[in-house]
Image (cartoon, rainbow, N blue to C red; front, side, top):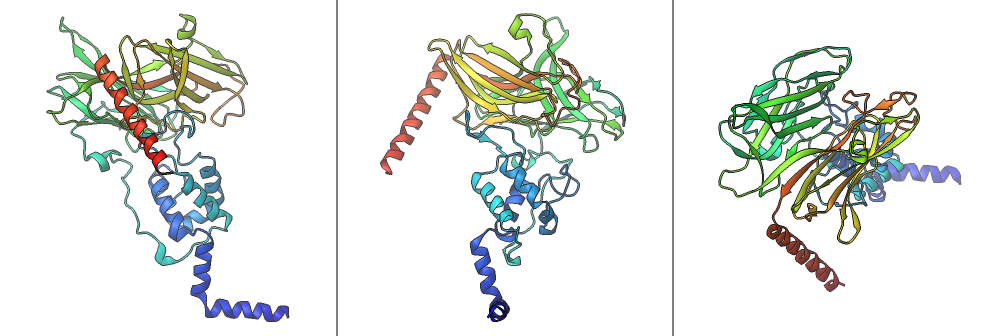
Length: 444
């Protein structure tokens, strides 16, 4: 009897392969139909030959051996790498890398089913991605309107932290409003370019060069920065640009290395409010009123806070936490003194220095901060063996500029408002939210 059952199963499989394949596809996801598209959308930009991913995911043969690890990293939201809490604070973001829960569930179900391939005809066509040396914002914005290069620097293969601080002519002859800005390390030195900051230098009334506004900032993993419509981050004419490029040799010598800034402009006839962007420090200086230093003990932890208020309303357009190897989490809150209420705007509970993202809030969802309210930034540090980024939990770690030192700040883009504009934006959002509530109630 058992022999007849086995023979019957073999005959059914041989005579009706299409039926078996259809039943299989209906019962669980396959690589060809569902998972390949998820991999294309979320993974292949980094996981392909010549890019920064440690393995390539451009075919089933490449993906299948890594399926259990992909499931683990996707389910824990470690990949795609976008450190932003999903249930705390504002969730409406531009260029949000986080995978949807539906896609996560699909990948988990696919791996649990044995990672089947499916039908060849279900595969999507291959996708083209930017090369390592391309502008990452170019697909959306085209090529930059203007570029600025640092002067060349020989990056050694080995050694300690190095800083290169050249001053170059911006080549900008007229004042314009920045639409977007991207700082691009060279493809050869992307592994050793820890960060690259830049700011303008302008002539004062005495014809002396003084520091002006910040231009751009790069840290590992960062896409770039886009200025919201109607906001102007102004670029000064006839200015110089001062760089602060931090190299940390990674075993690869790069002679004559240059970092490049790409700038996209808004149309000249557009009207704007002024925007600025600056680092809000989280050092102990803001806690004690002096000092500016701290020490994290061996196998210990630390929390720091920084505070900032304005005498006029502001809109927060983007928020980018920055710490070093012991940094593990950061939050941004607002304290409203009139009511005593405190509100969490954004939080990253699984922050890592391997990926630095500028979290840009979607239009109409940027935090509106009334005059006198206090922005609170809190950073957490873990100098124990539980922190996978920690190179040595037995060391004292102080505040400083080296990779093995610690720091804590957030790059925050602020649009300055008057009371009339502030009240107008608040009213628009209240009307939108009330309409949404009414619409949801009417659909029941």
